Image (cartoon, rainbow, N blue to C red):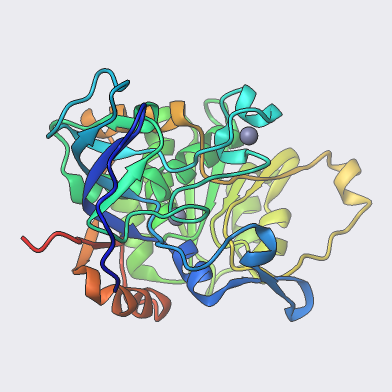
Length: 339
Ligand SMILES: [Zn+2]
Ligand SMILES: [Zn+2]
């Protein structure tokens, strides 16, 4: 814990008083310093542009505390959700509104100080979305886990009547089930190894559930698709175990969207990729416009995220430990204000 001067916003900048900051798995990777690469290697975040010390926290909801002199449309007290995936604005991705895939990212909580803090300085009011009428605690996680699920469902790009398999019924998978039901007419199949989580997914609208510890998941998918396979699979686990099964679930012309960051590597049957014309692609968070869409879905009551644990700022390490130990269902948040 460190005491810092409260920043004074200038020009387009906005100072947000943090109500809640979601505790995300990528905060764990930052905390541990990197990701598992192929063959048990370690990919350091510092080799990818992260500089320590850093205040983490990229899922931030709060209220506007102060504004720079050029800010329009926002005033003190407005309830806001922060879009954290900020780019430098000039690369090809930024030019088409995909700042989350910027070549020189400036993400809050990863490349610049984020929301594990009482206040956070936002570089421009353009990264804020008003969320009147929504609960700040549960809305915070839309900025990363919700947005990632939304973007993955869009990238999977299924048509009415298609089958979409969602691998992993954790926070992202459960959100993806709700989004898939809200914005597609696909048959949604959830696969996980935990029956309680599968039950939860069914409650949220999943049409079928497969326990992949007791059943051969790719065979089950073939069985329910007349032997053809699924048009799309979104793998929110994406580790050495799930990835081969996910590929095997695909129908000809099928698309696998890889999202999970558990790491490892995948052996591919190279002849099958052209023969079955598969598309294998990744999805990483999402663009600003997608977050605007998600907030609209939340306001319509079509999606809800579950906050199961609340921590104070000085319990940040405890929050990360619990997340690491798999003790958090849905989302944990840090609430930095002592109120
Ligand atoms: Zn860029
Ligand atoms: Zn995140």
